[in-house]
Length: 309
Image (cartoon, rainbow, N blue to C red; front, side, top):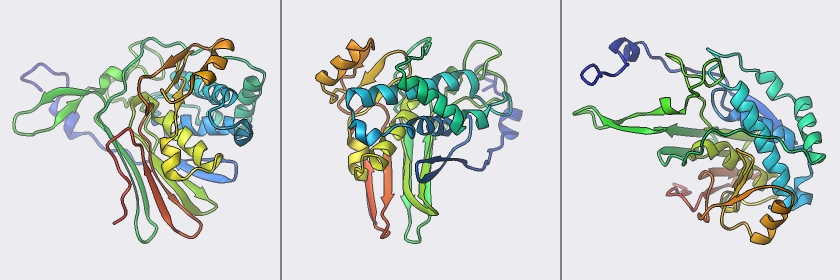
């Protein structure tokens, strides 16, 4: 670091400590869920689920124009709140209770029901990083682990003899001062990673997470809706066509039919079609049935797999 004029010092590395926190708890209909605390993406996931439980999503039908509109507006609202309010809680007062409040979510749902569109300013669009890994595990005793590890934006720099790259996550901070995501020494940046466990009463039901850059929370959200509202198997839930809305546009995977997106365009939405059949994160999950039977699903657009050993 010193030889190449870097800002990191020996003291920075020697004094670093990992941070352990209690889970961020939320609920969706009759289920409870545990996810990660800010500056992770769990708060976005909880907020979006809180908004969407005010709609009969099963009755709307999976990936119908109205379904996509409702879910996309929930995504946009969570994105606006993340940009304005979510950062490292050691540096910025994150209003966790307000953003995860059910009454706050009902107000957002009422606005969506009235057809209101929220504006999401985007400074630039990034290609999602391919350098994140997720693993979901359930062992024979019912112990569950969901873990997402990321290099973020690899720097391409390797110290001779060590064999690993340093990340470049400084590039994800907000360069503007005084904001939730503004850069500062010793500060953790926001990450969309949201490893999550869903409980049916006091029993784990779904163990889930994903790689996928800024799209992780959006991918995990849809896989959970697919499993919980649309009663899909875990394999079906992670493989169904996804969409995302982290700007005023709605991005859709190439398997969402044109006759669906044309309706959204008539409603005034810009629709951006991905050339990928599988897009917007790579969700991996395990479902635990009431009889204890385990079934898994790994996003077919990624290099993971579901395996019983």
